[in-house]
Length: 255
Image (tube, rainbow, N blue to C red):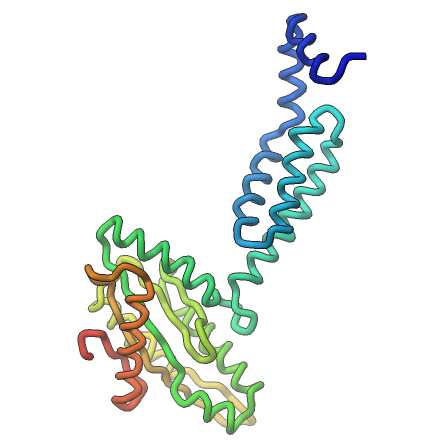
């Protein structure tokens, strides 16, 4: 009895290769290939276990072309794709505020940084800290503090451009990446955001609670080799804003 491979060679020798190829193309549908590529890209950020699942799915296509049930493959790919998308969201989104987290900030920020270097465009970071947030937690409790964090995150998100990226990078610390933006424009955006937050109120037991933020601003310089170089300067500028009395924007040029 001929093996499957020998039978394939015989099909080819008998000039039935055209029919064989047609069956092969029917089995390997474009949707399958696209889903596998998507899974491979997403699996890069996760565990070896998820990568193993993707490899198994690929082998199901390559090895079981003749016998594997297309419906089973579609179901497996779809279910794993949904699960992978959920994992991606968990890994890159802050659980409390539902905005990007520090991991997403670092990954996207690195891309923004290198694109800025390559294209020789301006790139600015805003480093934001909620003023006296510890006092809010101490006086009102951490539950209220969490609600205020969510309120500020939502307000910040509504105050930036679609091309910008807002992320929560610490307890009460946020950062905003501003591509194609120099430090002068960055300062204007920062002040607009600061004033919006200053006017935003949280109502607690019929009392209006107002918050303020301090912001440090840094622009990509010629000597910067990484995003962290910018972040360190924006952190120093933020510290200066706190030192000068809080509720203000300070650029690295003011250090």
